[in-house]
Image (cartoon, rainbow, N blue to C red; front, side, top):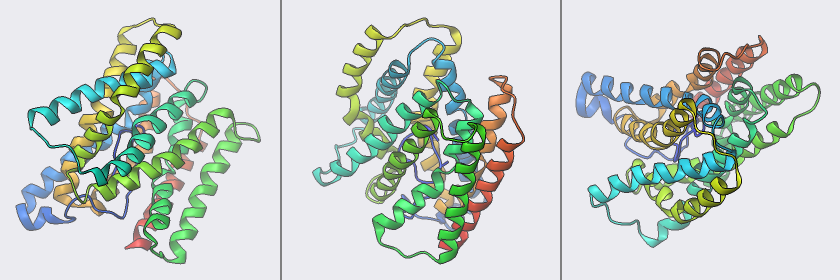
Length: 320
């Protein structure tokens, strides 16, 4: 999540449940019993932990690379991982009818969300960004409602609006009365990533989830290579151990491996149960911001994150 709080993400960062189950919800208990369910829960928990490190890893990468270099090089490296797996397993390309949706996935989760959040993190703290992007599950759910034409209860919309108000209020309070440029980047990331997550969830009904992100990355490779060449030539480069570590984590941990174990976990325990684990992602990112980056949290950050968590929990129940 890379970005970011999601239930059926199609790219890293991640953070929210889409109504389109990429696998058979709840098959874990029926097919593999308690042991299988525990393994699925472990996979999903590992994915959430991976996603929660996306913002700190981005900050580390920015110590040695510019924002455009970070995003494009990250994408190239992640594509090498994904493409190698697709070739090794001899996975055939998707049907032509799937490529428009894959383009939305790529625009939202491979390019849009990583780029906008990386630009935001140049001036925003990790803790601030984590709280704002914690709204992503609600944004994704609202987008999915529009996309599928379903009609959730008034309680769903009430909780979604309260959650949005909490995040907007937090952003305004932290910035001294009005949203900053970083906040605008983050709110833009919420919108475009919600579209990518929703389309990824829909695609995952027809192909394994890891193939959704894999082909979305492959489709972006030509653009990412050109972008990386230009960005590395125009932006300053001063690689350090931290910047390389952050970049590698973004490419392998957040963008590909994290999504692989996430979809693997959902295939066992189902979307609904897995999404409950991801409610902890913003709070985990707050912890990492203190431990890895030495940030000092104000009381408003954990309180706002908890408020958003409660609102997400209400929307999950209201839609079921």
